[in-house]
Amino acid sequence: MHAEIAGAGFAGLAAAIALRRRGWSVRVHEKEAELRAFGAGIFIWENGQRALQAIGAYEDVARGAHRPPGYETRRNGVRNSFEKINGTNRYLLQTMTRQHLYSAIIASAEREGIEVLTRSEAVGARPEGVLHLADGRSLEADLVIAADGVRSAVRDSLGLACERRKYQDGIVRVLVDRAPFIGGDWEHVIDFWAFEPRILRILYAPCEEGRLYLVMMSPRDDKEAATLPIDPAVWGSVFPMLVPAIQTIGARGRYDVYEMTRLDTWSVGRVAIVGDAAHALPPTLAQGACLAMMNALSLAEIVTAGSDVPASLKRWEDQERALTDHTQARSAELARTRALGAGMQWDDVGLRAALHVPFGSRPEEFPRRTQA
Ligand SMILES: Cc1cc2nc3c(=O)[nH]c(=O)nc-3n(C[C@H](O)[C@H](O)[C@H](O)COP(=O)(O)OP(=O)(O)OC[C@H]3O[C@@H](n4cnc5c(N)ncnc54)[C@H](O)[C@@H]3O)c2cc1C
Image: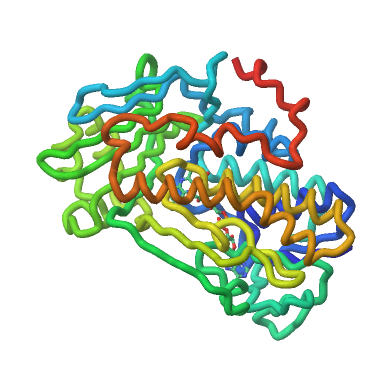
């Protein structure tokens, strides 16, 4: 069985590795000239860690990623929630640069001998199992996977009903040096919120090798804050304790608006849509990449077990869709209400995906106690 995959992001590579490990031949098409991660840092919850274990990338990720001992929220400088994490308690969360995560996944793909073609742009697909490339070629496969991100050309070529929504806030993401913030509470993830004199938020997350990931949220219509390069005076006046980091940002950073994509169906014939192409969500629960890898893994597991690819893809969606829909809905609600400013909303509703054991992972290979 052979799969052609559009997009070498987290979803595309996870699908490629999971299929390859189940005996498929796979080829991945990436439109960029090189494999490079955008977006500064990333949070990977336990479900994402388990998916990484199942695609042979967990050890490399865990070697170096930061394991914050606590997660706290401060509103106008006052702590309003705190939870110990990464010990013997309930929640496992690692923070890292995107490049660290991506490198670990690429290394696993290389070990599996997976062919990844760069400068290979997909422009569409046909349900009978054909991937069309920008260079004019059409490649046949038993399975075509559209993992080409939130603005998926392959998805759009299929004419699927697709709901896309933007929310009121946007985010600047940046990596800086962590040197001024070592030890004590600075090892935690800290979610700094301010509602006066203006609505601003900085999510502070230590990463590997002395890097610090700052997620700087502001309303889209705040022209002074929702802009690049950031204005250190605007941010520093609201978060004085973070000034040593803010003043080093300079021209760096990437700005994104909170977005959501929802499809009527995740497959047509032999074409599956996975990751942000199918279910992008606001980052309020830090689940986009975790869900992308989980759903890519279960896709490989289910399509390998079945004998009829289109029917297997329907079974895959039947099985996975509810948790993804739930996580999208909760993320969207948190984006709309900014409820995280009142403290972490860590309950079985918000963290249902984080606590989920991905289908196709091997729980026996992920003993939680090794994390303590
Ligand atoms: C501000 C912000 C913070 C986030 N934080 C987190 C977090 O902490 N934890 C978490 O789990 N998730 C987080 N996410 C979500 C996460 O980034 C995405 O869900 C994840 O990147 C989706 O992976 P993907 O592989 O589906 O798509 P992408 O990462 O977008 O990868 C798609 C790939 O396809 C390639 N491509 C695009 N078009 C084509 C084409 N036509 N042909 C070939 N290749 C193509 C792209 O170059 C890219 O390499 C965050 C998102 C945002 C916006």
